[in-house]
Length: 178
Image 1: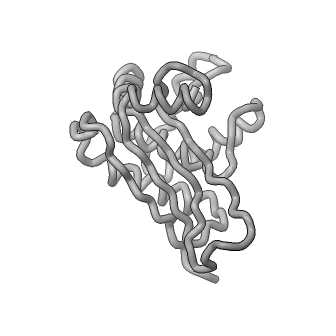
Image 2: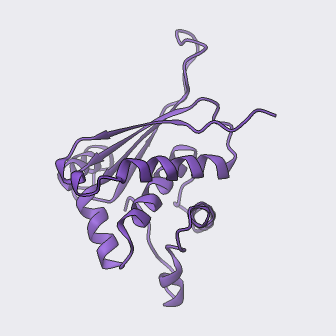
Image 3: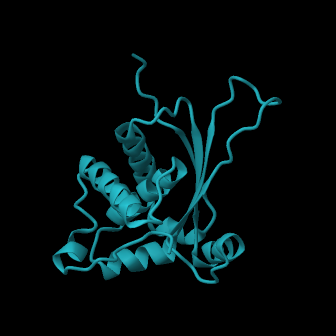
């Protein structure tokens, strides 16, 4: 049995506001590694990139790719499957890209009275799960994705991010990348 190898995660900080959270890169690395290990997906030596941007940057991405002209917390861009020929056999598989906006992440963490690193971990896990095929378009898919997020976050010692919503009896809850 092969030993677990986490995906290679390149983190690009493109907005100065992230300097307020100097541990963000380590938080994201830890969250992605835990997610990859717990989903038990055949990732091999996969790669992904995480861009830490601001509300302006993510608003542009959201508008360009989804036609929604407003900032959001996280966006995921799964890589297209490789087409035959031309690629090196030993090249790592590209999973895709994740973008996370500082101001929205900070505001949501403050509004929900959660530690910033807990919310950032949740968004990184959420984005990673999108890259490997999870979505929340249908209620059953959303439940499966949320259950997986809970399991991964619990492994990181992070409380259930959906607990408040369920205590209040709300059906529609947090959906990253609205």
